[in-house]
Image (cartoon, one colour):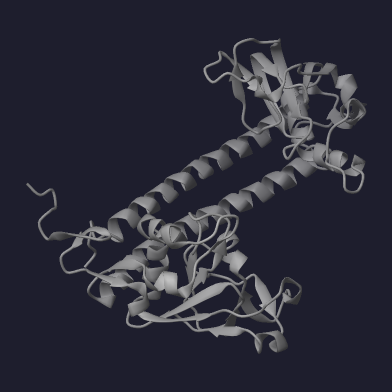
Length: 396
């Protein structure tokens, strides 16, 4: 007995509606290649262009705003793109990411650099294709035809053999693209709001943590102390980074942003833990309870100032201190003196410290709530893509 729903059929790309077609990508348009545009030819103003790396790092499914520009002389040696073109990254680091695609849906004059494969489709909605080409069903196909190990390549010939599910009318394709575009607009709007809230928080931290702005009800003096004066003990953990245990009972802090677990604890306190080296050098954790730490993780305990205020102060100003102490070409790391001698501006009134910490904490909570909402929106969009791009849900 077939499990295929009525009105649907099994195809090489999975179950799709009976009135949908499966076509080779090469049958719906013509391919050409991008040309030129070296890194040192990119300007901050001029004619819009796209380099292949930006397909991975800057754009999702279609180009909204260009970030790179070139002169007319460079443009004359490049490849102009037309409204409706699909741009594929011809090289990538892994088979899973090869052939990342963006649609160009505007009318402005723009150019594509080398290592970009360009498809000019005919009679098919380009934005629909932009979403489709980055969906799981197409990513799997592209990964199978990508060639190479250290660097993976995909050619126009490879792309032309990909099989795509197509709704019977351009109107249905456009309706699908519009629905996904609406979801993108919600996501983009929320991302902008989060960025705005983060900027507001940074500005508030800069003013509140230096006394440039005072909270209502507080007018007492501030003082500058060294970090070694506001906490009674600064030490490090004793363990190797690989000492973690998957099902350990206690938290184990290394120089990573996340924590691990371990069977034994060495500390039972309220502490700030600071990554002493690596890519997250200077990252600050707060924890209260039993825990253990890596030998290059600094553990600060015994505070005579509000610990949350100090956490925020370090989060805002420690990075600059670390950077100032690094010799050219050296990997950033923290020496004990980096911490003990760091100057901290603090209100003498601990209630003012607490109030400042609470305001910034409230901002963090608002941003975290928005980030959770953003994750939810992104999951909803993924679900929409799975439904709409396979015809499980029809809009027309």
